[in-house]
Each structure stands twice: as C-alpha cells, then as structure tokens.
Image 1 (cartoon, rainbow, N blue to C red):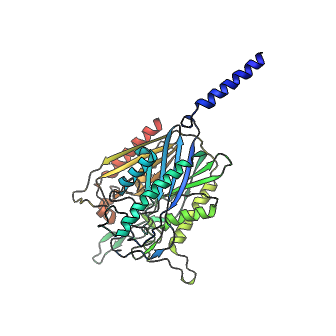
Image 2 (cartoon, rainbow, N blue to C red):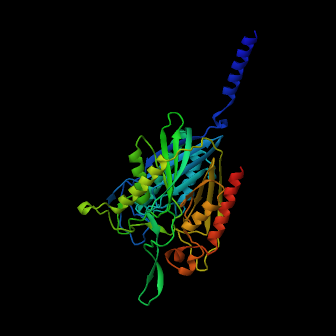
Image 3 (cartoon, rainbow, N blue to C red):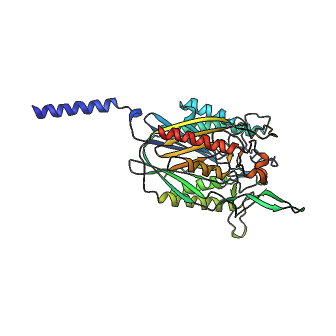
Length: 428
C-alpha cells in the first residue's frame, strides 16, 4: 500500500508540474535566428556620398537582414542587423513601429541596426526626395524586416550561448593630420596608423541545446563599411557584409552571422573609398580582402569559445536623451538633437545600442564602465543621430567635428547615461 501510494503521489506531482509550467515560466533560455535577402531588385541611389547621384549599375554581393530573438521567463529581446547605411530620415521609427506591432514587442525589446555599408540603397519615406525606386525599396524592406523577426521568434529553441573576444587590424584611425600649402596642420579623412583605435572583435555564438548544433555567430567590430567610395555604383555589403557572408559560407549548416558596427565614428577600413572591385592580374579586391580577414577572425574567435551560459535573465531599457548642440547647428535628415540609447542584458552579456556614429573612445568608455563582463557596442541602432565626437577632437577640427550636431560635452553625457542604464539592468 505504501509503495502504491508513493508511486501514485509521484505521478500526481509529475502531472501537476508538467501541466502548470507554461513556456513563459520556464527558466531555459531560448533563441531563434532568421535571415532574409534585401538586395534591391531595381537600380537605386546608393547611400553615404552626396556626390553620387546616378543609379546603381549592378550587384557584387547580396544584402541581407539577419535577426536573433531571445526569450526567457516571458521576456524577449530581438537583435536585427541589416546591410544598409542606417535608419535615417524617420525610417527607424516607421520600421520599428511596424515590427513591434506585428510581433507584439515592447519598444525596448527591439534593437534595429544598420551595418553602415555605403554601397546599399538610401532609405526614404518620401518618393520626391530621392528616386522612386528607393521609395519602393524602403517599403519592401519594412515588410521584409517584419518577416525576418517573425521567423526568428517562430524558431525559438533552448540554447546555450558563449562569448569570445578577438582582434583585427582591418579598421584604422581615419583622422589624418596633413599640412596645407600655407604650412597649417589640418585633420582630414585618410589613414592614421599612429592614431588610437579599437581592434576588439566581439563574438557571441548560439548553440541549440539538443544536438549542440551551432545556430548563429553574432559579431561586432568598430569600422565604417566604407572600403568602397562615391564612384562605386555596385551594390555590396562592404566590409561587414562580406565578413558575414564569409562566416556563413565557411561554417555552413545554416549558420547565420549578424554583424554590427561598433563605435567607429573615427575609424575607417585600412583601404577606403575605392571606386571599384579591382581584379586584374590576380588582384584581390580590397573589400573582399578586408571582409575575409575580419570573417576569419570571427570564426577563429568563435572556435575558441568554451564557457557557456544557458539562462537569462533578459531585461531591456530604451531612453531618448536630448543632447546639447553646437551654436551653429542646422537640422538635417542625417542628424538630430537627440540620441536613442538602448541597453539590454541576456544573463551576463550586455548589449548597448546607440543611434549615431560614435567615436571609438566613447565605446571603450562604455565598456569600461559596464558592470557586465561582456558589453557589445552596436551603433546606427534604433535611429539616426549623426556623429558623437569626443571633447578633445573639437580643438583639432576635421570632418566629424564639422558635421556633428552636438556640443563638446555631449559625449560625456551619453557615457554617463548608458552607464546608468547598465547599472539598472545589473540590479534586476
């Protein structure tokens, strides 16, 4: 009787546990990944250079949008990387609203970022401002972004995650000191090998718990994707996009590799603003060379990851900060007086999204101030706010100082604000 009672009691207990624990109450971390092609079907005006007004003439390599969705304990976080320059001129709000409504996401649960390639179509919500093909492309892109997030959420599976850190020389300080004809020193866009930079390659890998299959390798690296310049009229993901493609091709098996541009407002690729993909006499095109170098470091770093974390918690915060502007500030579609800050955590891994082009020292300061062991910096995220420049650069001048809408004290305000958000997340 006692044995039968014990077995019966255990059965009832098992029934209770399995019937009352809903997926939202499980403590297991789940993730899903998806990818969608966003290569333009028609010629478009490519973004990033005002002098370039002709339509694109072809496609060197495809553009994609990639999504990673995390879920644990009913909390969700979605990271989206799109091979475009960024979400300027109101397109961030438009597309974020569409995604959040379709996928039932809170605003803080979505981090929508561009890789900052300058060889992708300019986005516009006004067909009179660019070319009708660009307007059509923007409308189609919105639907594709909704789709890729829906697919990632539909593929949620129990996973483990691991983080590794590598280094790459692909990016170099672009603030080059030159002497003009009058003997005056000026800062111009170029190559400054002696200038400081951030070589860190941040890598996060996701493995499905059942079978240990590698599902995704996400990475962040600080460089502009501007190895191609204004004379180029061929569509390309440039450095970040070509690195994504290399990682996915090399690893195979359906692995998805979303890339994010780190704090690179003053960092360009080693070879920059080239007019074309050169191939004559065995020449390896510089964008392919740089993308492959970065991709190989991502693969090497991911292969060395051993330690993993399996659980959350997941929490996220979004905040829009009004920043002081320069006295001569003039608003445009590509800068605003506010910056959107998004901070999130998945366990001991933090993600910081910044809506502008951020000098690398600012990214380093955020990582140093973070209470998390790993803090990914993702720029051109959830908006388009223009350049954020360190205070010391204002006396030197240069392109970034000339074009930034913000006053010298703005960078310190952003670092302080982000540090506060990360502290809040750590305490949850």
